[in-house]
Length: 224
Image 1 (cartoon, rainbow, N blue to C red):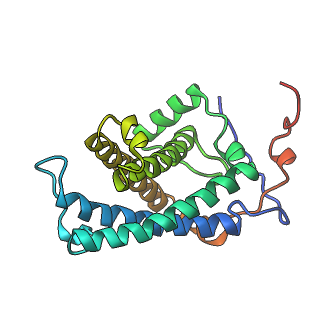
Image 2 (cartoon, rainbow, N blue to C red):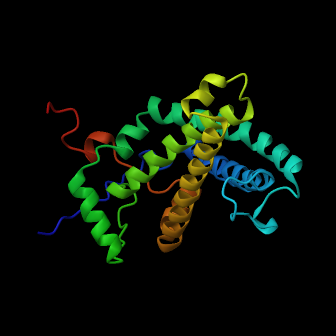
């Protein structure tokens, strides 16, 4: 059985990526890079895994104190911009429209296609199931990074947050693992953008214009 996905474009509809989304997306991207690079510099001053060190070329800051300054600067940008992104996504309904629903059958099919290198993204307006899960996971990881970051930054003032992770080292470990999740997401995200360059251009230009929601989904609003 062949399934055809319509593009659902309209000459006068809203852009796939409105300008607030594009601005917040690129600010988040820069802030994440700053946070990751500086975080690696801080990590090297007190390693968690004895054999794991990050070389200077991938670190931001020549020593721990300098890395901390970069980290604190990026922290406020990422937290405020990330909060604005979450509020925008929920208030406008963008998250609901773009990331839901997620069906198990769709996840299995997308994984099979990816393992066979059958990566197709003809319709930029539709996320596949794996993309939806990745975006949700990285948003949850971002929230957890704020929580664990506060616990590591002010362990006395936020002792109740430290208690959630057992010990200070437990909070550090959770913060490190959250970073690893975000780095993995960025690697996958950038790889897919390079494989399908139209997705990168869409985040720069706004992408195609969309038809009204009811035309994109003829069953919208009908009782289930």
